[in-house]
Image (cartoon, rainbow, N blue to C red; front, side, top):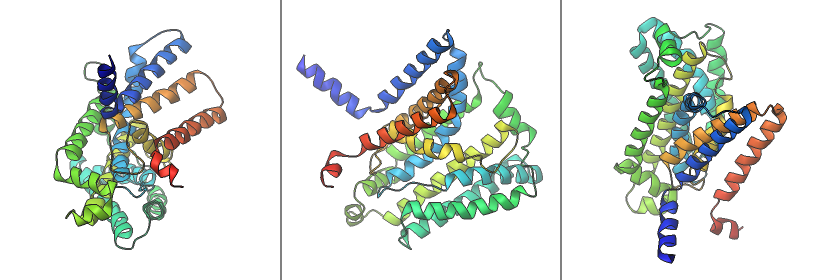
Length: 320
């Protein structure tokens, strides 16, 4: 019996994502209890809405995993910028060339974040916050010249297309998650990223190229923000300046809830996926509960603080 308990404990320890998955089921059941009926459509609708957060959180998770308290605070502005510039370039150049230009600009933002952080030794949060303000200046300028209306095919893909009754956004987020799983757990980059997140100094002595690895994490984060902004622009039928604002804190919370360590060196792609779904269902539950906005913000903020505190390693708290 004890052996079974130890085995189960080890399995849960290796698959921490199970808590985010179970939490998502609980939220779904609670929504059904509040509304008076269980509906698969509610789950699918929220899975569609969670797709944007899933993609964005995959990039944020990569930066967090790089260690030293790294968080990308520029993504909320990169999302808005991408929504605007993708609509402009897709109209002028076509969908795929326009998308490539948009992602190319996002790569430059990621490179800038990496250079300032790694070469100028500015902490990641300060670096990305400052870069975010620069990007937001671009958003303000471009928003005065365009409405950010997406091309019809992008709107059709994000709003109307269904595959077996399921939005393709759900399948796309699963595809992105699968790609991230391969990248982080089956490639040299993924091993280098986790090693750097655990101890950059030791990883450097082991021959890992820390600067290159961390810079790649910022580039991936900006790319995911670019994809998210493009899809959000199509889903909402246009871009707006604060499009990414509501996703910043949740993009941090989703990986942490799913098992990614805020101290770095440990990630969970599956946990991030279900963490994003959990947070989306939580918002839906609060909405159907008809709680005032202040109470909703209080609950979400309290949950984020609780998860962040609980995720800090015990050794780290004991040394304070």
